[in-house]
Length: 570
Image (tube, rainbow, N blue to C red; front, side, top):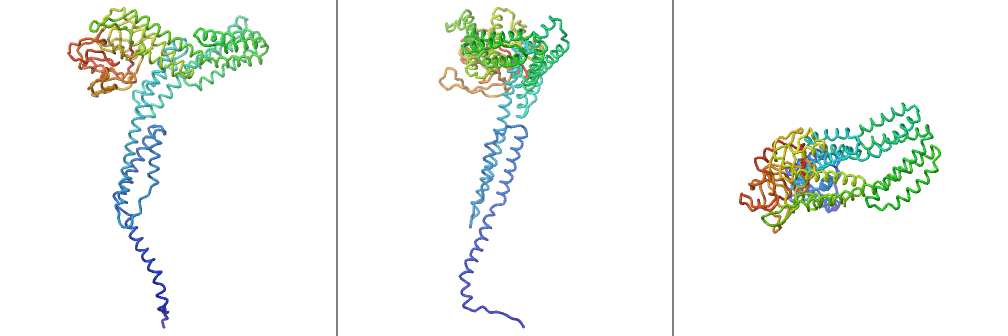
């Protein structure tokens, strides 16, 4: 027997108002869920583009693109990932539009990531090349002062070879790090060498007193050997601390040395104060410090006294280093301008075409490298900055000296010039490939391992826009490109877009060695106003700071050289 319970009619009527809204909601949700699905292909494309973006970001990270360069892209990706598809009840179009837009945004970010990677690579490569050039100049300066440079020179040679094959940001960062460390170490080495000299002085005095110095001599030799190998500031600091400890220990074993050591330390400080005064630096506060140190030196009787005194002197010497090198830099740059102007005013080129007179060393004047040195000096703030100014100015003074000698040299342009060899020796480039450009004779010569390979007549610079003398490295090598004028139309220096077949950038700011198919005439005087036999008006002036070369010769030079070639302009 089945049992059933019938719902009274009055109860059934009561349920209907509550059931109808629920049924309607279920129906609407069904429609909504169907609409939210949208076009599966659009959603798939968005997912694929996101995966492509993530692959691009991961690749950029893996090759060493700095995280700071990628932060903007990562932030935009995060914002996109936090969005949701719109809720649509009856129409899939808004959902499809969302995924299409998402796919496009991911695609653009992926393209942007590739662009960031390419730009980062280019910038870091340029920085590595600049750092290499800075190390090369510092090597020249420190080698001349007797500082041991063999280890740093090995770093230079190794990384000069590496940069030729490097292609990723990470590789260029590693090159810059090694090279910058070596440069910083070279600049700090002289101070540690002075401390080593103190140890050598002690050994000499003990020998004169007929004492056994075998153990000390070994320590000195070990220290000297260690200094010959250091290429990082940390390694140098360790050797520096070792020498400090040895000096203190020696002083305790030879009490009679203390008075002379005290005087030596005072003399070290006094000599530097006098040099600053000669360079025009206000030394009032340093003279006061020197007086205090002299008074304290008279009270030094024990090892502990000497340790305290020596530490005080070391601190005083360190404190005056920025002003000391600032004074040297200011003096040298001023001396540079004086020498340039004196020689230039005495050696003018008379242009028969416009009746004007021009100094033959205009590349060294304010519109040339002189402006660069002034800017470098004005921007200098740290000790390292002033040391670099000094190194650059001393090198430019040497280039100027070579120009003056070359002016009096009648050797044909396609034969070895003694000034070329002196420059190559100055920078220790005897075993390298070197392009040498003489601005006073308007010629170019290529040397390999110290031997002349070929020589050309060229046109380099003009009075207002001279070529830039110095030691340079190729920053960019281009074929079949187009140059665009950095000057606006109406400027006397404006030029129409120009096809260039072979170009080697030697200095930032758009300074190149390149072919000049529109010229017929090259050599002395073509950097000034003249009438070119081609009839082209644009060929009647010099260049915008570039080195112009006949097209077939430019092709030969481009194919023969590489990023590892040095460029010497004087």
